[in-house]
Structures are given as C-alpha cells and as structure tokens.
Image 1 (tube, one colour):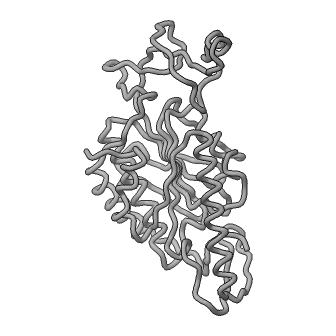
Image 2 (cartoon, rainbow, N blue to C red):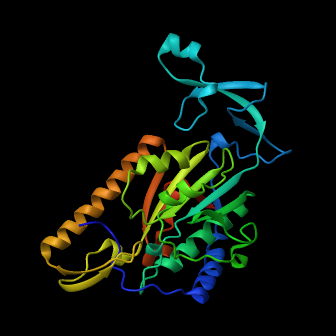
Image 3 (tube, rainbow, N blue to C red):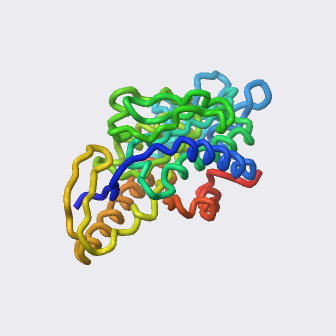
Length: 300
C-alpha cells in the first residue's frame, strides 16, 4: 500500500491562505534565520564571506563537506593524510534564503490545516530571514519551479500560493529547476509523500548551498491511519480513485510504510549533510522549537 493522502476532494482556500500568511508573518517577528558559518553571514560591503570561491585572498582550510566545490579540494593534503580538505577564501556575501515549497495537491488536504500551515510556515521563515537581513526567493513547484509573485516583499503581499499541481517536486525539477543563489540557505517544505529516491533530489538541493533544511509537513490525517471501515480514496497527484477496506492490518501497513519513508529521507539527509524534521500542521505553532533545535531559527 503506497503512502499517500486520504484525499476526498480539493478546495482552494484563498482567504484562509492569505490570513495564514499574515499569521505567519507575525510569528516570524520572534525569530531570525540562523546563518551557517560557511555562508559567512556577511553583508556585501560590510562583512566578508568565508567560502570556497574564486578570490585570490586565501584564508584557511577546513574538512570537505557534501556540496563543496571539488575544484577547491587540496589534493596535496589528501595525498599526505587521506583527508579531503577544502581551501577557504574571503569573498563578500549577501545572506540569502531560498524557500522551496511543494505545490502539489497533497499539500492541500481537505478538512485539515495542511494548506494553511504551508502558508504560515513559509511566511514565518521569510520574516525570520528578513530579521537576519537576508534576501529571499520563494519557489513553488508545479509545471517546473516558479517564483511566487511579490516574493521579495513581506509575506502578506505574496500572490498565487496555490497548492494544486499534479506533479511532484522531483518532476518539477526535471521540467524547470529553480535558480538558486550560491551559498544560500535552502529550506524545503513538503510532505515528502511521493515515490522515488530521496538522495537524488536532495543532492540537487544541496549542491552549492551553505545549508539545506528539510521540513516534512504532515496533516494529522497523513500521520494517522483512517478508522476501520470502507473508504473511497483519491490519489491527490493523479486523481485515481479506489475503494478500500481499512482493517488493523492495512492500518499497520500504512504506519510502517510512512515510518520507512521517513527513515529513507532521514538517512539521505544525513548522507548529504542536510537537516530534517517533521511537523504536524495542526500543531505547528506549538512545534516551532523544533526549528530552533535543528539550528534553522534563533530568537530575534
């Protein structure tokens, strides 16, 4: 049994989404984005960046991390020590957040707080980035990745945050990948409920980033099997319908499949140097400490 959403219908909640953006903006005032050391957290013209760049101003060495530019590995040190070491240079850097939102239909699960939580969380993260004097770009998956209109403004001014795509983020990458800022902080917000190998998309997200954070956002209905009985389900991505009978064995299989999927993403994140957490949409405001624990946010 595939892990998916128990989706009966899709409804757009534009007024609610707009309000969720406002609510997230208010919540975000409490936080600032935590800028990783490798990103240098420097403003152009005021502080210098510390990164493997093209400057001739050599500064230091550090151990290789997944996503580093292979051109800056010191092979002489590797020959002597069997350790991959990267040369660091000084370069001016503007801190930047690339926020990647899963725009698929599964993020708009009817009769749950999931779609509102996407908007609220996105607004919170963007506001925290502004508090850290970061620039930002908000990417929404669909027929490729597109930036949200007005995404450089405050979240309450954003437009067209519509979670109605039949494509998974992985499919969107193949059509039109986002144009990420080098050495930016990247945050993926998705339920991760699609088939495929997590490592493939994670490597693309991690490439050239200072840090990658994966936030699995689930509705409580995603995380909990339905009650026993007959159920008509609609695949939120394909529209395929089926009638199934939920008994204890099916419920157990669903729970095990979800746990297996989460473990595969967790393992892949660990392999490529990303950070991952899972949040429940209905408990979002009470779970923000998780974003501090993963070193994404700090109190403003």
